[in-house]
Length: 215
Image 1: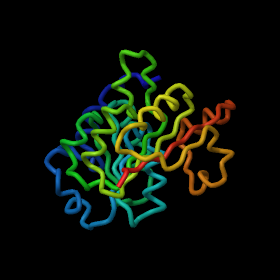
Image 2: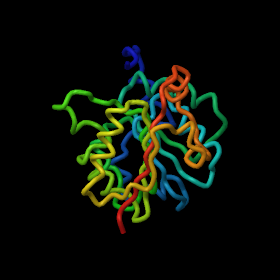
Image 3: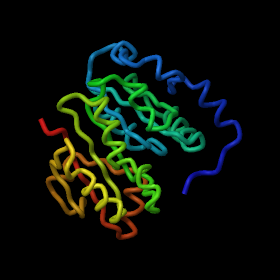
Image 4: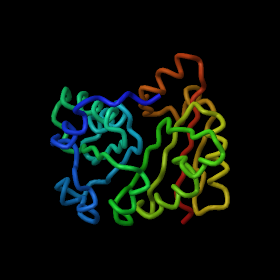
């Protein structure tokens, strides 16, 4: 469930130093924006930002970009960001994931995280799922040759759909599990999102897959 619209959220986002206001103008120039040539990792649909902020704090040698399209949700992430220590390796974008190829050049991103994405359960909305072939094609246009995608969800139907979407594409299924929290290898360095913590406490198994290009 999305947060209700919060009055003034748009204005706060537009004035925030942590949000890049014209990301399309940085296409091909993200290394200049960060001031280094460190790898860039992107979380698409970051929600309230806990996951990407924890990663940025633990890995100063990696640049992170959190993407969220809903003002009310991004506002919550900004409120958390303002309480954190300085993290020059993290920026937020308010945008639709369909615009990724308009914001990043081929090879500019090294990893994409998809965490508890909207399942869009109706068949007619399948193309909107962030693990659909449509979106895999978009990711292919921005990832480096050795880039990879990591996807987590508690929605079994969405996960099975995602596994099927990878078949017959240029993507290789590197690893997957239907019960992440009982998979010792895949749990290494796992960072829980807000939803992951919530759903696992409810007893829902967490599913995860990792894919990369077939070279």
